[in-house]
Image (cartoon, rainbow, N blue to C red; front, side, top):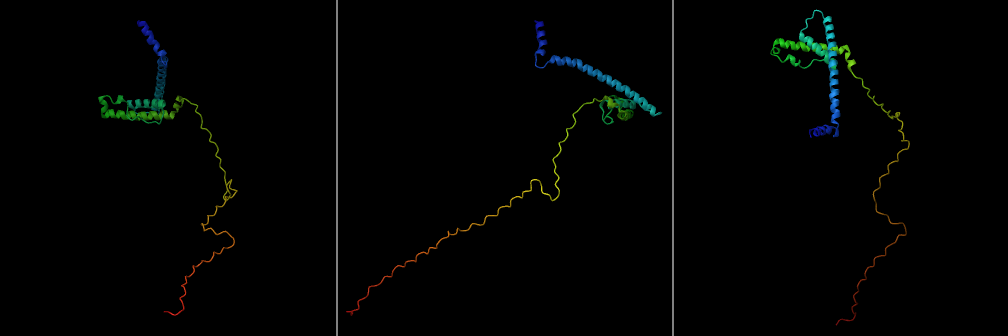
Length: 211
């Protein structure tokens, strides 16, 4: 029963949608190889830093460098070759300069300043050595697309623009104000005269003698 259960559990990753077993084996093999390459690279850069430190001491004979200055020089040289960028010291020294009680003394603070100064100098030497160019990976990126030429026509002053040979029609005049309609032409008709009503006449009185 236990064997069947173990076999079923072993087959579950293979039956799942994303192949967990494949990615797990890839990580177990690939990541250690990459980490080993990083360690080898760090050792090589550290050796280059020690050679640069010897040249620095030979170029400045009689200089009394402290151990913290030498430590910062080596770290700054390796950091600039590994990470690139402008040669600048870190904001604060590493924790090994801030973990003991003696580090919080004037001598400890002087060691911190020496470390930062050495880091700055080592980064400058690495920056100007040009060794970082050998640590970069070249990539073929597509170049910018050529811009299409602009269709621009130069027109001299006073010349008409293309398509403007035909003059535009003049605007139509405004409509005159509306007036009363005139009578149509023809013979003039005279209206008949007004008929006046006849006057009422009184009957004539008799001419005979009055009684």
